Image (cartoon, rainbow, N blue to C red):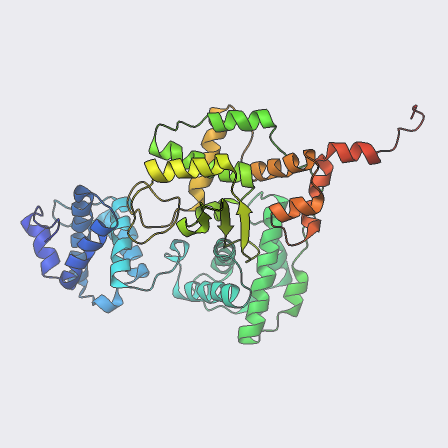
Amino acid sequence: MIALVPLRPRPQAWLWQSVLADFAEDYCKYLVDTGYAASTVNHYVRCVAHFAHWLTARRTAVARIDDRLVCNFVDDHLPRCTCPDPIPRSRADVGAALRHLLVVLNASTVPRFLWSEPDTVRQEVCCFTEYLKEVCGLAECTRYQRGRIVRSFLHHYFGRKDIELAQISIRDILRFVTRYPDECKAGTAHVAGVTLRSYLRFRAMKYDDRVQELIAAVPGIAGWRLAALPETFSDAEIGWLLRSFDRSTASGLRDYAMIRCLADLGLRAAEVVQIQLDDINWREGTLRIQRTKSRREYVFPLPEPTGRAIADYIRSARKVTKTSRAVFVRHYAPVDVPLATGCVHRAVHAAYVRCGWTDRSGTHLLRHSVARRLLDSGSSLKEVADVLHHQSIDTTAIYTKIDEKSLKIVALPWPGSTS
């Protein structure tokens, strides 16, 4: 059996004599198919053997294995484990191994931020995020963010008790929004307020709770969306940024291609990682963006530098995958798992640091810079909105503040000065 031969007699006996024995072969095959090295497979199997020994001692059936049981093993058993050596006890390694086991077992999983929560909170947050998906149509990252906020609210006011909103007062609502998290910025408090209103409406729809007074009590956080000037990079700074990548390495080629998508096309980080191989029409020189924030599909002309960067990465550095058709993939196992947006943000942040821009952050600076270049070249606001695929031109209106050519035309002379 793959990777089981090097196991010592005791861990191997634990695995073979447990309820996980029938799944050991599938587990090993899954790890190998996702690109893990033989040494890592062996290490993860020993972690599973340790878990199997714990299950046997508790007489736990396979049907009861879920993320909550894994959390109990990692958080409660490992810190005071007295099982005989040699077995892995690293929480990070054991947790990773058991997350893969849940996939193989097809066990129902919930987000990790809910693993340590009581059943009442877990079930409530899962129902709420399902409502956000099916009824509100929100993106996954938004559902995740709002789920964490509601988790904090329920954990603080109910803990392990049943959720009864009749116990929540208007003062509780005010205190949560204005103090989430401690010393939060206005934007964060605004999101907490929006989330709380959404959750209260969900309760009214699902359980017919009378929450009208609580909804009205959620404070509105002052914030002026168009108050600030969008920060942008000059053309020279964009050049420095692109030259900061080491394209002699696989990760350098991938990061450079991703940054070109941001800097040349004005894409969002989430749109970059969702580009599929089939979305690029090399013959016509176009790129299709299917999963945008507005749930629409767009086709862009693919600039030659951007296309060349993507082609160089695909030919020279992209890992061969069995199932994933994503252009940008992980370079380490599991390679078939979609690349997360965090990888794009880290690549951009690292490039900023290499350029010495420690006071700048975020991928949207590159998106703002695309808008600036379009306005400088004489493009209309509607054309900028089309390139950035804004549904409303009001969203694009903020860029009028950096359109210096147009502002000079409409600017009035200073009182008392010579016109």
